[in-house]
Length: 215
Ligand code: 5RP
Image 1: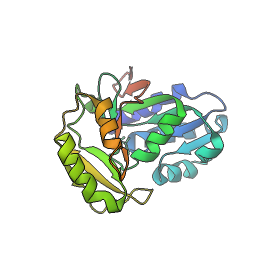
Image 2: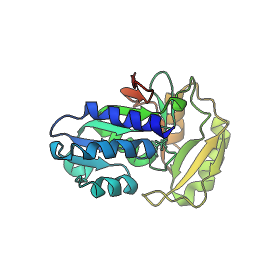
Image 3: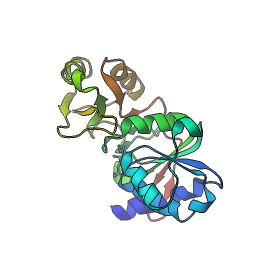
Image 4: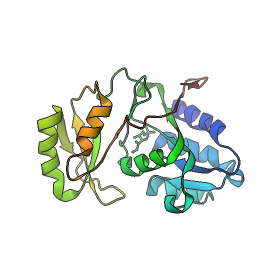
């Protein structure tokens, strides 16, 4: 599986142009992208990172990590996913970095998603859908999700996001209208963000097949 992740991560370098400030996601597939980015680090303007984990790896490679407020809009964001449907809509947040990932995706002109083939699904939802919540709202949000989505939220105990919040994972969903579900969950008080990337899906998906497939 990691070979597929490596192939996808390295292929994404094709989308990096000289002088770019590159948005960088989080996860094991992105780690391969960061390692490949290091080989052209003198040609880029730096990176905006979606997690402390990725920032650490970027800095270890000598790549400048910039603040999104200072960089302004980005030309490119490269990130992995937990699931990807045929419309390039995604479930993300398995690594609990969904909120910063969503912010950078929104700030970026082009979102290139890098996945191994196992992430491709006809309908999103077999992977439990992550939701970042303000800690005091955990049980309120749990009740609202139970009442309005039909899914079973489970607290990812012991995990704190880089923003100091908690994560619920919604099990048992079959997400036939991801845009509507994203909007519904987003409006529950106490929800910081939901790991559905449907309103702003990926623009390009690279699947790490032996000859990487670009969708
Ligand atoms: C982190 C994410 C990751 O992109 C997702 O979990 C995929 O990770 P990996 O590349 O390790 O399979 O959304 O919050």
